[in-house]
Image (cartoon, rainbow, N blue to C red; front, side, top):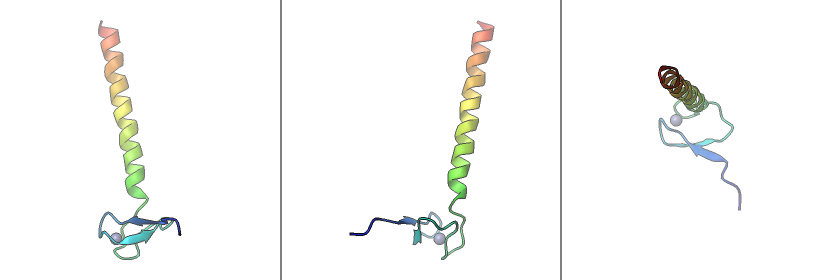
Length: 59
Ligand SMILES: [Zn+2]
């Protein structure tokens, strides 16, 4: 049994090779969503840290 080396394209729903940087069917960049999530998560952590720091300083 071969391992599942494919992912499903978020844009067109077709199977794409796991190592492919962009979908060969529709050309959508596949690495971008992950990077966007990491940036969003880092931003969220920064905002929470800022709020906690503001609460500590005011109290
Ligand atoms: Zn696609």
